[in-house]
Image 1 (cartoon, one colour):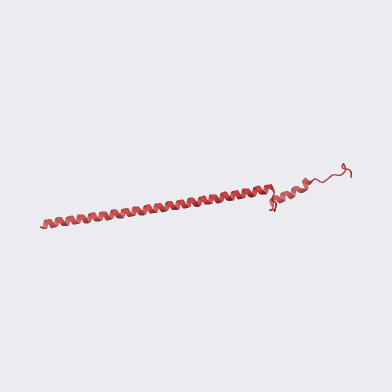
Image 2 (image 1 turned 90 degrees about the vertical axis):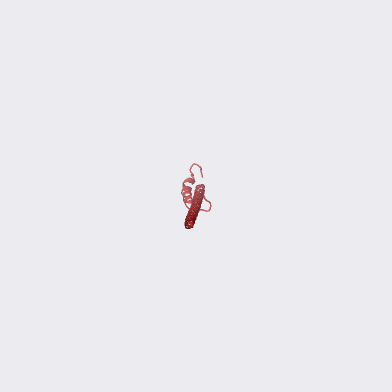
Length: 107
């Protein structure tokens, strides 16, 4: 055959649709575009997991703060109770003093 009369079919038009189909469907040997898409999805998933972990840490910190606040409230209540006890003691002392005064008057 003479080269001038023979023309090969162009491979570009034959393989182009096949490549586009491969990029959309999962294949054992992924094309570079599908590789980048999987890496981006994995990085996105990692970032989402990190965000979730951070949120959990923040929640734990908030819980700890709430616990500390509750402890402080309990301490304040205890202080108030102690103050009330002291007041009662003072009242009792005053009553005793009054009683002593009355005894002295009686004598």
